[in-house]
Length: 499
Image (tube, one colour):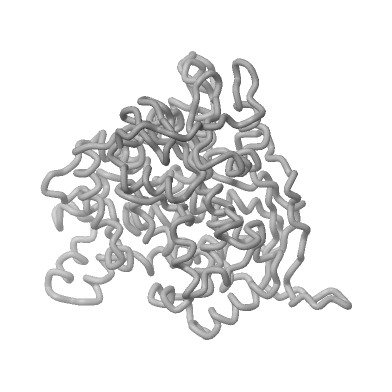
């Protein structure tokens, strides 16, 4: 690690006085970050006057995340901004004993068996929400997907019996919370500390969110306290008497968060709030973005939709979806994985060098931001043939090993996303439920443009959902129910709005 650097580190072209490459990152972030691959395995950029080192070689990114992770601490400008909102949640807490302790505490929440216990309750929640959509009325798909992921995750996190008024307030509050958080990450820190109306409103919403989480935690604690605190003491008594059906129903009502509440070495109330905020935000933004882009790609690829529906029909026939069906839907998993690859969803992640480091022969000075981009790696033409195309079959068995090092949507190493298993389950549940509920859907807005903020989200996407398949247009070879729209061109620019 202390060997002298031997390779000169090129500075990306196009920097401006004072603002560096900030204007290019703001105006055209995805083409800019992808272009850095042409300037070497490690490329210096400037964000304002501050240099940052972008790693474009997946082998070197693995060194940052896995091999030499101890020397690249979780940090950087984006993480510092998010920490104001998340506190010391698992995504933002500094490396060290506290991170390891919290991760070990939370790991059981996300094992496959624990998720499976909540799977059918999540399916019921999603089916009720999707089935209530009015027919043939344009809907804001990105907002819908965020609402669905939040509803499903609230059931998994706090149990199926979370009071309706709490669930409703979470649903109403989180979109504005997410917008305010994104704004905080984009602005200079000194601006976010000014007593501006937007800053005050965001602080008030965050305070309200923490109060809601407290109420949800108290609800779970009362439910866990037993018959004396449980309004449905009869259910508890029957379960204790050995009735397996009632015991199973009660298990469905428990939430992942019970694991933390019942830990031998429990977290403080502040830490519980921080972790709940981290989990809620991660479950909404990344999963909702992926689902929105997946539905968009389905509208563009009739054969993909046909194969999805045929797979679902073969597995479920005429009965409702069950959690056990998910493992028998490999094509749906490939479709979702390709949407994740193509659209991120995260596009820029930072670490901080803990000392002067040699990264592939390039000197990275102590304290410097080290940037890696899942989007950049997942669009590498040397790894993914025709990376801008949507091809679920690139994930067929046998192709995985060649692409594993460049598929980094969930990160890698000791800071890899703890909720990956849950994310796959939630993604498959929601996609399958939409397809089972609505025989057809179509885009009603123009083709969306990718907008890189925290995730790569669509700037605008509306669809209508129909109870009956739409007849194919005369003279068209397209299967019924599909409206194909042109793909946004490579020069499409994201909207400057922060969403």
